Image 1 (cartoon, rainbow, N blue to C red):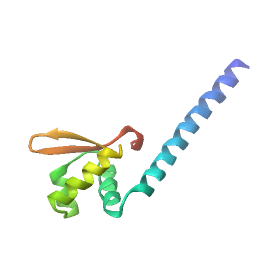
Image 2 (cartoon, rainbow, N blue to C red; image 1 turned 135 degrees about the vertical axis):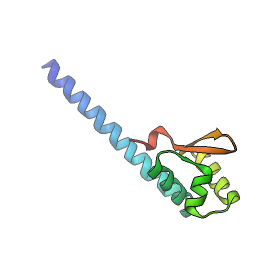
Image 3 (tube, rainbow, N blue to C red; image 1 turned 90 degrees about the vertical axis):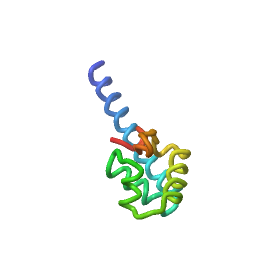
Image 4 (cartoon, rainbow, N blue to C red; image 1 turned 45 degrees about the horizontal axis):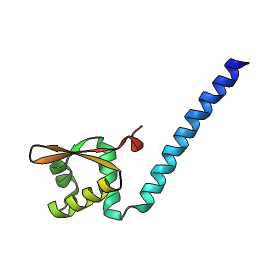
Length: 97
């Protein structure tokens, strides 16, 4: 009996965590501008990308991309790590599976 209730609790915990993650993703995507969404989706697709490479892929100016990345970092969507003269961009834990 204890084993069954423990199993149910574990299943419910994982189900709720998955639901919460999906809900967080949907809410985040609703608050992003079109350009922010484009940048964020490319970072999600790559899992990790250098900022200079992202700029070439998306064909954006340095200043525009930098502003978008700063907005995404402020919103908690990505992590920006300094790497020589550029940055390495990664989605935060909430957006990786």
